[in-house]
Amino acid sequence: MADIEGARQVEAIELVIVAGVRPQYVKTRALLWLLERYAPDLRSRTLTFDAGQHYTSDLSDWLLEDIGLTFDHRVSPPVGSISRVERLGQALAELGHLLASFETSPAVAVFGDASSVLVGSIAAHDLSTPLCHVEAGARRDPLEVEHMNSVMADQLAQLRFAYTERAYHELEAEGLAEGSFIVGDISYEWYRHRYGNPSAKSALPAQSAPIVASMHRPSNMSASTVEAVADALIRHGRPVHWLDYPRTRPFLGLLRGKGITIVPPLGHSGVMRELVNAAFILTDSGGISREAHLLGKPVIMRRDLGGWPELAAHGSLYPLVGRAPEDVEDACRWAENLQPFDVETSPMVRPGGGQLAASQLQALVAQR
Image (cartoon, rainbow, N blue to C red; front, side, top):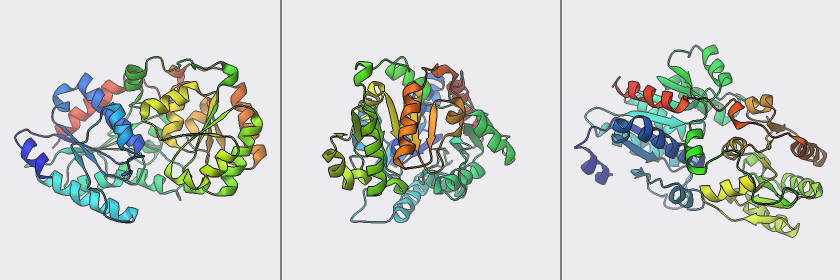
């Protein structure tokens, strides 16, 4: 860490952005872009910190290179096999040391509900420095780890960016309206800048557009679930492209044997191309489902609790709670019949949200 401390102590660092998983890496790049556009002085006084929850090259390096993001500090790779708790503890110790190395500790920004959100939240709380939680107010099943992560981050934060009106009302009901703002998905403006029209047309003829599938959550990682989903997708009649993910690898032989195309690990641009060319998407990933939605694609969300109730209410996401073949087939028929929708009507799109986020971060760092 000496390289950061030596190089940056001459400047007054005001903000440290903490990320640890793929969706947070993308949001880090998007937030930096918003600061470059709306608060360039704050951008020049911002550091980035990778908590390393996704530390393998498959899950991080290609993505980071593709989106042009280089972290100022990355937690050292583990030696041998360590638990997630040990990994997060290592990240917390390193982040705490970094924040304490400045005469005035910088404010901290964290994202979402993955476990690495707690690294930045606890470090900021321990050092009594302001905390911003981006994508605040995500509430699903209280028994889910992600639900409790989000609740704890929101309780510790002085500034909360709700991604939808529903998320804001959840915060309001918990007595957290003060310091909470609806900004939408902060990645949206950056997506528009990087990829152009969010409703980009597929490069493939409509009849040959594939179904893109991606599952990685432990609740879906059984041979019976993977096979049931795969068989139902095949019976639907379209080509199936299945995104490679470390947890899925024990099942790749099964999927290849059924004639499914396995898509190797890709950078962000490659994943976006797959989504643009898809007829529709079946996934259990919060990040991929939102990116597909912001591209105007029908999304089938395979989670026991459905996921993203805002998008289900919008009519652009099918909450696939069941996992029987007939459940998947019903979802596929829904996706085929969904009429194109205007992404600008999405509950996750908030005009002016990016500029509001940048201005509120400026106000937050002034509280230090």
